Length: 134
Image (cartoon, rainbow, N blue to C red; front, side, top):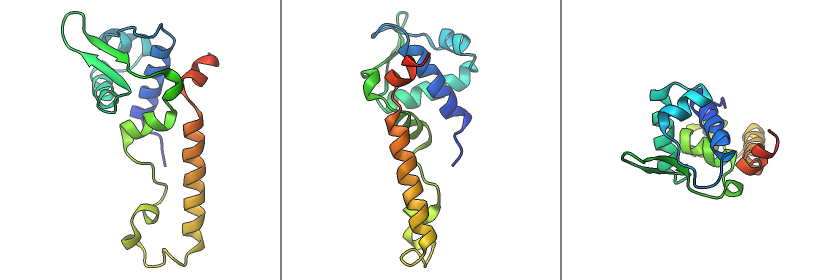
């Protein structure tokens, strides 16, 4: 698995947003400039985060984006899956038809264990935890 630039930018933007008081509204263009993220790319990222209900969005003159949940409830796992979809290290983990050895292959068990550990670790890092470190 490779964390894409979109996920990295999403995490960076959300950490920035989490440093501000709860309920703060952010304009996309200002957030893009402050986080050094291309504006149009950030727009797509913010829309995905809004669809996943991590952010809320409002149109209009006083519109923008704001964090929709408590930062202690938003994990890095939530952010990555909002941007990338489900995490899967190997296709055999989620598609049993992909490999006929899925029930007898010890590598399958290894990939499953590693993926479960990775997901657990990503869930352990919340925005609240990340903002404490900075």
